[in-house]
Structures are given as structure tokens and as C-alpha cells.
Amino acid sequence: MVEKPTSGAQRDADPAAGEPAAPGWREWRPSVVQGFLTWLAAMITYALVTLVAWLPPAGDPPDPGAVYAQWNKWDVAWYTIISDLGYTWDERSPAFFPLYPMLVRLVNPVVPGLSFPAALTVSSAAGLAVMILMHRLTTVHFGEELARRAIFYVIAWPTAFLLVNAYNESLLIALALGALYLMHRGRWGWAAVVVAFAGSARASGILLVAPFLWEYLRQHGYSWRSPGRSLRGVRPDLLWILLTPTGLVVYMAYLWHAFGDPLIFRTAQDAWWRHPRPPWTGMMLGADLLTEHWPSVEPNAVRNIINMLTVVLALTLMLAATVGPWRLRGDGIYLVVASAAMFALPLCTPMENGYSPLDSLWRYVLEAPVVFMMLARLGRGFFFDRAFIMVALAMQGVMIVVFLHEQFVG
Image (tube, rainbow, N blue to C red; front, side, top):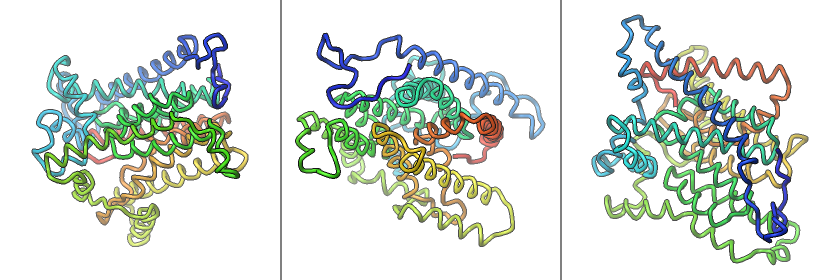
């Protein structure tokens, strides 16, 4: 079922009640069912791949009771330690925003084991929410057939397994998708609250204020051709936008109290060689490294190439969603604004470590929903659909094994 795109007071109105009518179970059922089945298939696949991941180095199978511990690597340790000990144990820890470890700490008492299984529980639940909300949001704009393809493309993406690992990725994306759906529905107060939570999950979450403002103005008849006149449609409910930075502001207040520096979350990134730069800096550094070491092939060079290709693919699809024959209707442009804003932040903070400036970009592209919606549109062609699925799933399987064997993926 496709919701008819409307704007302003006309959207989803219930003539009898005079208020916007919330979609019921009939509208949400396909998203819940398809999202759950896709998520369940992924969880089973990840479990099977984890069980056989010990094969490449040849050895005895791991203790089945400790198999899941193979996922406890890299950023996972930061989140679980923050959940257990707070932030003051290490001045680098403020780089990791508080909402995810707070949820892990909340769930920990009801999940057997230590904070790691609790973190897996939070991430897996958020991953399920990503599937459901991505399906619903895509259905609104493109219909159910494309929505089914879009969520499968998301979960097939080579780094999508991090949506269920103890990272904050799935939490941030679920909040972003929820906020975007609420913006479409014109629920500005709730959208602002969700954006505030997203801003406490990761710094890029606060950038959802850009699609909030864009979509609000569009639904209230704003026109760039006559900005003064069209601003008459603005209502007091725009003031909800003042709530959007609340999560970030509260976190900064805590950091000021704990460390004496409300911006330490930014300076802590220096430990990972990340500094604010123009968005093209990472691509230039990557190109320089490739030409410097050409034609040698090494893991860092391969990671550089993959991440550079990811940037080109993402930007190309965002551009195609904005101009040309594939451009979205006016009611979908806010999806491009959201995707571009959230993807821009990691582009503007490359890793100046001398060997992999764009590391993790192929993880961060998961935060750009319009990329997967556009891929799903391309997937109407049989060859593209089969080729994408085969390549993406094969690469994800390899990346899971690589990750489980102590190599950095994203």
C-alpha cells in the first residue's frame, strides 16, 4: 500500500476528526512482517558464519558457549566499558556518545552475562527497528515492492553485519528513520524529540535538523522564488525545532562538569587522527596514497579503494535523486538532505593516519537511506538486482570473517 504524498493540512487527514489520522496496523503490518523476516534471516546467517569462521586459520572449533565473544572487538570495547565505568576512566571516551551505552546499562540487569550480551541485545533490537522503519519510509515514497528490495539491499550491504554488533550504528539509523517518517507525517514535536535523541547517539544525529527545516517549509508552502510571501505559512509549531539540539546540549553540559571542556567529544577524535577538513580532503589523501604506492596491492590500499568507490557511489546516487530523470518528487527531497548531511560529517573528518583516510565510510553509508532507495530503484532490472545481491552478500561474508579474525572493517 502506498501512502499518497501530500503536504500541509491535507496530509492523511481524517475528515471526521479533523486531525491527521495515524496509519494503523493494516498499513504497518507489511513493514513489520517484511522487516522481521529480513532481520531474522540475517541473524541466522550471522550465527552460521560465526560458527564456521574458525575454519580459515585451521584449528579446533571454539567453545560454542563463547562463540558470540568473537564479535567483541574494536569499538565494542569502548561502548561496553563506558556502560560499566562511565566516561572519566579515559579522556578519549567522550568521542563515543552516551545514548547507546546508557541503553546497554539499562538492559544489562535483565540480560544474562556482562555488558557485552546486553549491548548485542540493544543493537539487534535497533537493527530490527531499522528494517521495519526503512520498509515503512520507503513504502510511503515508492511502494511496497521497492521497500522489500530496499531493506534487503541494506542488510546485504558488506558492512551491514555491524547493525547487529555492539556498535551504535543501528540505534542512530533507527532514530534517523523514525525522525524522517515523523517529519513526513508532520508530527513536528515528536520528530524534534527523536532528533534530540539522535543527537545524543552520535554527533551526526543533530544534522537531522536540516531535513526537519526543509520538510517543514515544504509542507507549509515555502517557495525559494518568493521567500518573503511564502513564509506566511510558517506556524508556531516550527518552534519545536528548538528541541532538536537538546541531546547534544545535555551531553556537552555533562562533559563540562566531568572534564571542564564541553567540546572534548571533538578533541577526543584526535586520538583516531580525525580532524575537521573540507569534504574532499579524504578523497585527495586516498588518491595520493594510491598513486604513491602504485602498483603494489596491500590491505590498506584495498580498503582505500573500497571506501573511495563507496563515496563515489553514494554521492552519485544522491545527485541522481536530486536532478535528472531519476530525481525524486518534491516530497522526497528531504531524504536526500538527510542522507547528504549525515554522510558529510565523516567525509569532513578523514583519518589523517597516512594509510587509510576514508576508513569506515562504507559503514557510514548505511546512514544514508536514500542511497539504498535509489539502489532499489535500479534493482527493478533483473541483472542489476542479481549482480548486486551476489556481490554484496559475498563481500559481507568475507568481511565478517575478516572482522572476527581481528582485522578492522569499519
